Image (tube, rainbow, N blue to C red; front, side):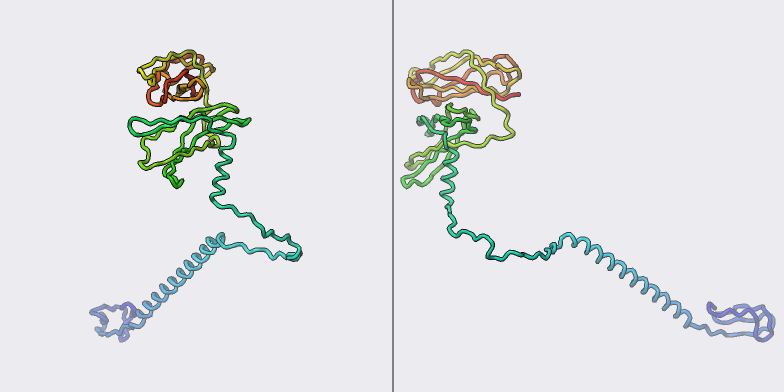
Length: 315
């Protein structure tokens, strides 16, 4: 009944039609009973039309998505494409270009290293060195460097190499001076302490070197030792206690005040080394601090005199 609508009876013309079953109608006026045949082809037509519309919509959507995706990929890959070199014509002939020299100087890696070492150590010389063995089996060296140039040298250090009988390197050690900037003509003393040494026979080779200053370093401050006293702690005169007063002469606070004590022989050569921090870590402007340090590990012989210095950082 979905496809045919009969409003009048074909027999009597009455408009009183009544549905009495599937595909059957009855006229109430004359009693005519009619059988209807439904055209199923119209339903199939609607179904096919619907399917066709869905296919067309899907195709249109797929085409739209494909087109947009291709456009996006072109934009993304456009920036990564290699630029096309312009077509430039060279007017000069190849014969007019300067010819390269064939006699190029070559340098080996060992020659380069030796040249670099020579530059680093130029003007910074080792003027004194003493060595002693420790009771625990180690050894130490007290090395004095001198700046023989007319300008300041930053970060002076000593490189110690232990070599075997064939001059092959066994070990290598570096030790830096507490004084980060060594003025022209000045000296500094460095302690190299090896807790253990090789069991095989060896000999040493030392070299003075320096490094560029760091932009992040705070300027090192040199304070004043006002007075100090030396007390002998043993009969051999190799163990000492030094006490004194360090003064901050500046108009600002200084931090991490470290006292360096050097034992000297009659000729003025360094034969002992000791260091310790002042009792007051931060010394205010124009103020002082006491200090005490023990010199009992790195004294090679009874000293004739002592030289003390104090280093700190600007707050």
